[in-house]
Amino acid sequence: MTAAAHRVVIVGAGFGGLAAARALRGAPVEVTVVDRMNHHLFQPLLYQVATALLPPGDVAPAIRDVLRGQHNAKVLLGEVVGFDTAAKEVDVVLSDGAGRKIGYDTLVVAAGATDSYFGHDEWREVARPMKTLADAIDLRSRLLSAFENAAAAEDPAECDRWMTIAIVGAGPTGVELAGQVAAMARRTLRRQFRGLLDPTRVRIVLLDAVDSVLPPFSPKLREHTRRTLEKLGVEVRLGKKVTGVDGDGVVYEPGDERLPARTVIWSAGVKASPLAEELAKATGAESDRKGRILVEPDCAVPGHPEIFAIGDMISLNDIPGVAAPAIQEGRYVAKVIGARLARTPRPGPFRYHDRGTMATVSPGDAVADVRGLKLTGFIGKLAWALVHLTFLVGWRNRAAVMLEWAWLVTTGRRSQRIILEPAQQQKITRTHRS
Image (cartoon, rainbow, N blue to C red; front, side, top):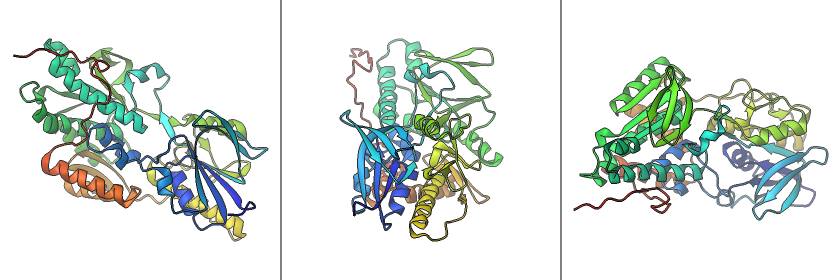
């Protein structure tokens, strides 16, 4: 690539950023992908890392490995902290703490989203989110440690508190977590804690202020999901607004009821990445109440045709913040960039092609709405599996995930039951047994 090559800087190697980078493979550009992590994260399967089903590497291939054959692309490990639109530079803090300015001719910002605690960020330390690979690994340790603590507890009430797991948020992430935690407790771990724990005493409580699970789905699929979760033993409590979270559980309205629980998982809401606010300040762009930037129909930031924003950090035609739109936006923006450089007619406004929504409910059941076709049970699970395997990056990852799924279905065993922290940090009290 010559020094005069058009410089495209892509901030974020999530679904949108990586799709844009790969779509520019044959373009006469120099692509620089900047991310604060060295891996691309397949978030739709992150809950399976948290529930000891998949190893982290199966859902998080290294960015350099994904782009290894793309000669016009390079990767920079660092965090973008600001934008200088006049100089056409991004401010980056590298992994060693050094600062650097990266020049661009075209900028694509795909910084994603983060968890929203609705003004109660102090809950984060107790009610753990699940947005990053580190979050999922931490949650896996907390879940497994909860069973260890319950097995070691001499006080039945303390045992019950450890065996109660509260999940706040009944959207796809909350539903998928609830189903997998129930399956892990009742099928996998009961064999490991024989004589120590009664798996029927494990309580998984799914809380949300809304009046149904999976609000974006059709009534038929919502009802199927609720019934399936309840058959698994999940307590579904809807119309319950959480007003407090601490180390002993959650408090919710109406009635200021308290649910004693040592493990609380947060999946109740998201907001745009803080970098969206920085980009809005630098460009004068407007944002919505979730901090998402309002972009032009071609995903360009208003007043800055050289800057594109894509994925969960933007608001455009009420497009949902999931993987498929981000991927399509990334590929679309690459086409716009290519057309500009070739001086050919640009593509029309971005249009999202909705190929369906889906969520898994249990290891053998999923719900899917594919262009009006409502699928449940095994057929829904098969559709869900095919779509997720298609979106996974790399054939090795696809094969590894398929093998782990087959192993779980056949044996009920989960191969990733590792607690990373020492026992003292997990506050496990050992009892001497005769």
